[in-house]
Amino acid sequence: MRAAVLFETGTPLKVVDGIIVPPLKFGQVNIDIAFSGVCHSQLMEVRGKRGEDKYLPHLLGHEATGIVREIGEGVTKVAVGDRVILGWIRGKGQNAAGAIYTWNNQVINSGGITTFNETTIASENRLVKLPVGLPMDIGVLFGCAIPTGAGMIYNELDIKEGSSVIVIGVGGIGAISLMYAKSQKPKTLIAIDISAEKRNSALEMGADFALDGNAPDILEQIKALTDGHGADFCIDAAGKAKTIELAFSTVCRNGGQCVFASHPEAGEMISIDPFELINGKQIKGSWGGGAVPDRDIPLFFKISQDNNLPLQGMVTKRYPLEEVNQALCDLEQGKVARPLLEINPALEHEV
Image (cartoon, rainbow, N blue to C red; front, side, top):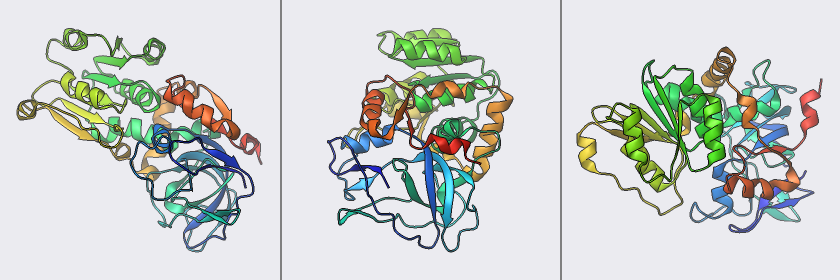
């Protein structure tokens, strides 16, 4: 099969043919990939911003849709022919080790899920059946962006009607958080981004206000929009030390909650005033929105239907597998919210 391989951090991925797919082991599933998402996690891996990579060379990708072609011993959750969502968050089922592929007599490593490849061997617990009525291209978002973005809203924050909510960074996860926060009917919904284009998109998604994150008076603007006290909730999806610090600064004392879903590159630290913690501000990191995939993916799909959320607008640009490095560059430069790799789009129409 053909796949994009990371041979050395700090260098582009190489798309190579002829990778040998090994036989299935206990708890593993063989899947043909239709579409794959591209996330900042892969960008950080490729650029070497997660520290030492002990598994080179290896495959990448952690959100996709595809069709099951073969199941290994012990697998009961899916069957041959099922359309599935692949995601990195562990759900029900066997937790199988990553497959070991070979190419030109060289070992190619992988984890419990990889998706920048035509065919993948995935652990059973990284799969959920694609809900009926959900297209396979949009279904990719339910592998990572939606469980994380919507999960923060529904699993980790107690957003009630009339609350004030801020979302910093209107990329993939931030845009999803914004949409699902809107479904909770907050009194004030504020988006913050340094990109004018993304601020405009945020307003189209339902934000009441969209502020420039580089504005020197950003905190004063926020206080003016939140009765002088700060917001009840703030989600940072930009993943930088300064934006996490900003997120903490924007929430009110006596119960204001800040949660962040991404993180800066290895070695960077955040600095916050502990006196603000004593005054009742709260901050925490989110591991995939606290999502339980088997429970939450069907639920989040239903919420999107009930609220007519514009998920289609998240897929702003599509790329063939050969252009995966361009997709990473466009993501890095903020040109796209969620790049989509069209690996085998014909599978969408397979009967």
